[in-house]
Length: 269
Length: 327
Ligand SMILES: Nc1ncnc2c1ncn2[C@@H]1O[C@H](COP(=O)(O)OP(=O)(O)OP(=O)(O)O)[C@@H](O)[C@H]1O
Ligand SMILES: [Mg+2]
Image 1 (cartoon, rainbow over the protein chains, first blue to last red):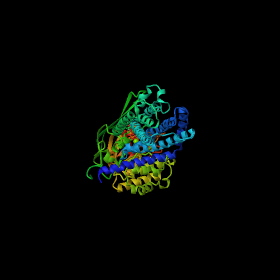
Image 2 (cartoon, rainbow over the protein chains, first blue to last red):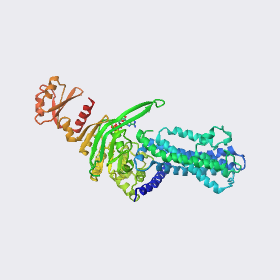
Image 3 (cartoon, rainbow over the protein chains, first blue to last red):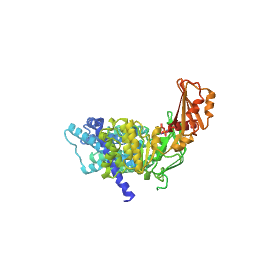
Image 4 (cartoon, rainbow over the protein chains, first blue to last red):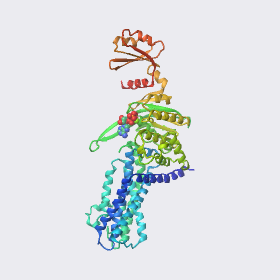
């Protein structure tokens, strides 16, 4: 067996082990049921009331907005926060000492958070459909599914970068909170973008999911205007920003690991 | 590989910079290691002693690839810790111990499963090996309870179990018996010796002198970032002034009595300690000719004079060394 296959086997195994650990910790701590189940219900109801009567496709808009809010929160909190917890528990040291690249530990958690986020999205869907008395019309089901999956990928990429920030410094929570706020407001998850001051958009455009979500709305809401440059440019922007994030995650992780070994604050929190 | 040392440290320096102040603009520099040289042979159990803050944990972390040296080199199993971390990590076992460092919401067994996967324990061997390790540290009966319900000592055992799970060639134990009851501590020492039988090289830090004396044929004393002694226990005894110790206790001594004791043949050191009204003089003696009778003869007229001889303990040696360094 060559070294490459050993490492190859180990990566999927590490990701699987980390996914399993995330799940075990989730079910061991019932407090998580509150944000992961109650929040989607509230987001769903609020956005239903907010967008009510705004055209025939307002239901889709409401579902996407609230669903994204709950998935975004889950991804960010789940991924970055888990690394913050590793610092706090003192488990970051033994995890880094183990011969498994930390990136794949993070990846496993992100897979878990995406799954948990989807669950939140499903709750939003059910709440809005029940409130409206029926499901929304979906003009392009296939495009919807594909773009939806793509949105998940963009969310995961942001999650990885935030996790890297948490490995890098224990002050990462600060950056994360700004990111979360920018996304909620800037993407029009909660309010239609046109209602907001223009300066909020550029901040939101730094995040790949903003672009992907705009494209998703184009294909599912006929007559949707959004940022106004069409779904094609949305896709270009989404792919470009995602590539940048993935690139950052890939190159930065190794350096981040090196940096913490230099500073020696792995057990600080 | 068997002819190269298991650990080879040359002129190792580690500086910590911590920032404080509102804008983190004040930099605090701590030199935790100030040029350490150390060699440990394969299969050895090597002891590292030293007062709090001496740099023991810092050295252990550098050797286990958790911290980079500021300057100097450290080689483990013939590989540089800064450059060959990927090669070294699966071969290193690390027990930092303490209350933290394990996932508390899941069971001990689940903790071990997770780390077995991270260390690449062959999947088919994972469960039997975890069971064997749990039994070896006497934690099998609590293996499926949540770690948050564990006592401090049980957590310590879990740390040790994780450290040996992947069968490392070299094991770093930072105060392995801290928090263990006497029986568990003794079993842990037995475990350490049995690992030596498996051919594992062990570097162990401890504050318990009898532990070091029992386990480690060779040891080093680290003080304020420097190695102040590095030898066998017997050689260290000799270095600080001999094999024999005579303790004299009474209600105070006069200066001329002090001087007379110091002038006895073979006496290398006379240390004085007060215990309330009593004063104890400890004499370190290199030769056999000076006996307790000689000492008593020099101190006539003291009520309740006690003179007794004992073997110089590692603790005596250690305290002398650390004291020597301080002055
Ligand atoms: N992350 C850090 N940041 C700043 N200073 C540090 C850090 N870690 C250790 N030090 C400093 O380095 C010195 C050596 O610490 P170290 O933990 O290695 O000592 P030790 O010998 O293990 O002590 P103990 O017996 O108490 O465990 C101390 O002065 C300590 O304050
Ligand atoms: Mg220490």
